[in-house]
Each structure stands twice: as structure tokens, then as C-alpha cells.
Image (cartoon, rainbow, N blue to C red; front, side):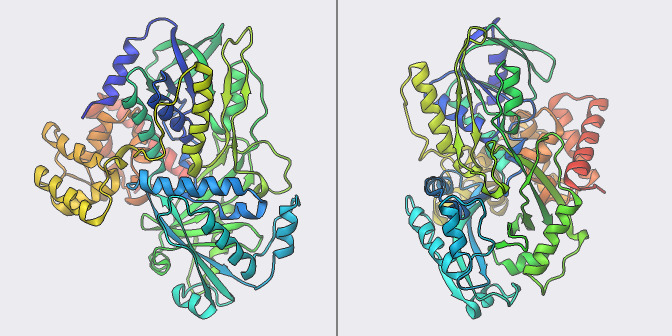
Length: 570
């Protein structure tokens, strides 16, 4: 397998002064990375940069759902629902190592409530219905099935009367009158998928470049100057700039010399509960329910923990956002009311996270009524800034591919290129050549197990975690100082071989890149200080860190987990 990271570094070494390049993309979240991949596939030379790590901002803080947007029906955003359900179905095919079906249960507490409020919302009212009765839910689910018919991969909904609903979801409050079950999807490793979009782009176009932890120093006379993590600087002269900085869009535009007021973000927080009884009772389902204050909440099994979310609070500082205690208590009270036969306490909360949704500036009376649709306004070139700036506003995880395609088509027209291929049926990262049915999966696992000498169950686990990249990781064992049998303390389903591979191959700058984004170790593995030190030692050997640097990296991870994720390592 080609070392994409090393190739990328060689391209940076070959940069001349003020190199001309077709497109510079500021921000490597899912939208920026999606546009980068699409344009690279069309032969457009691109540079993507992020001031932190790939996928480290808003894209790392979603509800981890790939969904069609059932709630957008009541605000009349039928086009968004149509696109979202299509993109959900495509992602289930193109990223099966990260995206999987999620049957979803909606508890219904009345028969007719919400009908007139829903009609008012459809005609422009700024007050969403506080309660959605059985009639409204049934109509909504039928419409949702209709929109999800393109490239269908999951069954239609079912509607259950009270007795049957409680049999399927026995811990739900008996106050319900009915329940609906429909299908959406969840994404297990969104941060990793963003990274894979970037590397897919680099593989597609050997003139493309990508760099994380890189700051924009200046924008002068059409020349952008950047500083990388190692202190080196470089300059490029773009024909066009894409501002994909998410909640930082207005700040980034100011740095480019163009003012804007495009973003009016809201804060979304989530908690993860160590609650085996709850996880077992969900039986693989998500419960999508209305809290007492009318906000939509959710709970589902995420990597063996119970994910509960989310809030929707106006906020403007994405650098310091975190889940606050009142939000945690709100989540606990919400699930207590929904599942009264289960016990919930603060000490079950083992991980928290929060992010700012880059929603368009809006005067909506409720954050939930701000559109989740996307747009790409253009600031045309000026005498002082001889390149146009395309800003990527709004959107959501599910629709990134379609949004990327729309933006790429705008760029292609402006730079005089033709689309060479569609991304609709194109696998992403470890989703490429993924075995498509159980028989093919068994064959793939058995073949790799025989070649590598690793147990088939372990190969299956790595396939689920990394997709088909798992075979390259196991091939690497022969050249590595580590074997797959060497496991992390407190996280025995991860090996030092995996950490060594990631550190050497996957654009790692800091230890937190491994702990929080290339893997989900911080969430799923009950990471200990000893395990973290083992990871740090492996990364230090791979990246040439001295003792002082290694200790700094360990300290930064400990601080980040404590300050932003409510997690203390033992």
C-alpha cells in the first residue's frame, strides 16, 4: 500500500514560492473533506488545510446519526428530506465499515395532538408542534418511506398499538398509546471517515496536498501564506478559495479580507452512559422521543454505551464549547421520564461532548426551527483579493456528499473543467471493496486470516473497525516492531500494532489525534493511564518524540478528556 502521508510530505517539500493552485479549502471537516475528495477525483489540484486536526471540530460532535431528517417534514423541508434519505442509503453502501442501519422507535402519547400546529408550521408559523400524536406520526412515517425509496436498503416502517409496542420496548413508559418503528442509520467513527475522505482525495490526485494543524498567516495580493505544525511556512496563489470552516466561517472570511455574517450556530451536547441494562433493553433500537419541554431527544446503543442527546442552544464560541452540568441533568431527567422502570444517576455518565452546529444566521424563535439545509454563497474576487471565496454554510453529516457534489460543480464551472466521475456509488476509505454479503465477508476474513496468521475473529474485529484497510494493517506487521498480539492495558481489543500503523501512516501530529479521532479508544475502551502511556510510547517511537514531548502529549490528552469530555483516567 502506498504511504500517502509520506507522499504528501514530499509534495510539500517540492512546493516553490507562491505556487499556483486551482483551489484552497480552509477547513477539513466533513464538508471541506468531501469537496476536496470530489474535486481531486475530477483532476482539480487542491490544497486542504485545517487549523487543528482533520475532522476535529463540529464534524466530531454530531449525534452520530446518518438520518433522513424525519423532523424536517413538519417544517416543510421536503427537498432536504428527499436528499437526506438518498444520501443515507448511499452511505450505507459506500461506508459500510462506519455506517449501519438503526431501527428507531417513536413513542406516541396521544392520537390526534399536533395536527393543527403542524399545519400552521407548514404555512409559516414559527412555533413547532409540542406533541405529535399517532395520526401525525403515521402520516409522517409514510411520507418518510416514500422519500427513502431511492436506492432503498432498509424496510418500510411499522406502526404498533400500545400492547405490541410495550412488548418490543418493555421499559418505555406505559403512558404511550402506540409506537412507530422506522429505519435510519448510525455512524460509528465519523472522525475517521473525515480522515478517509482526505486520503481518498490525495490518492485520486497526486498534485493535491493536505495539512492539519496549519494556520493561515496572511492573505496579501492573492497570495495565502500558512504555517505548519513544525513551524515551516509556505505560500500558494489560488484561483479560488472554499471556506469550509464551519462555525469559524465568518472569522476565516475576515482573515481573507472579506466580511460576512453567515453563521448563527447552536450548541449540541451529548452524554454517554455506562448502563448495560438500558443498552440490552434497547435491543439495537434507537428511541426518538419528545422531552417534556418539546425538544426532540434520542437514546441508542453506541459502541456498548447508551448515547443520549441532544441539546439545541444558541452559542457562538466553538473553541470552548462543552457539555455543562444543567445539560447532563436535562438528559437524565428526560430518560427517567421515558424509561421509569430503569434507574439513572450522574455516575453513569462516562463521556460527554459538545459542538457548535454551523447553521445559517436566522431570526427563528426556536433553534429547532433553523433550517438544516445548506448553501454556498460566493464573495466574488476584488482588486485586493483576486480570487472568489465560496463559503459552505449549514448542512449536516448525512448530506455531505450531495453538498460536496453541488459545490464541486460550481468550482468546475469556474475553473473550466468537466466532471469526470460521480461519487454516488464510490466507496470511501475502508469501505472500498468491502464484502457486500455474509458469504463474501467470511471469504474475505478467512483469506486475510490465512495470509496474516491472525485469528479469524480478530480479523473480523479489525474489518469492522477499519474496513478493508484492516488487511494493510496486518500486512504491516512484518515490518513493524509490534505484533497484533501486543494489546493495550485497559483496552485489550486494541493492539500496539494498530497504534504504530496509525502513528506512522495517518497524518498524526499529536497523541490526541490517535485517541480521539483515528480511533474511538477514549469512548469505548475504558482507557487507563497505563494504556495511554503505552500508546504514547508507541507513537513516540514512530514519530521521533523525545521524553519531554511525549510527556506533554500525555498531559494534553489528560487535560482534553477532563475538560471537554468529563473523563478522568485512572
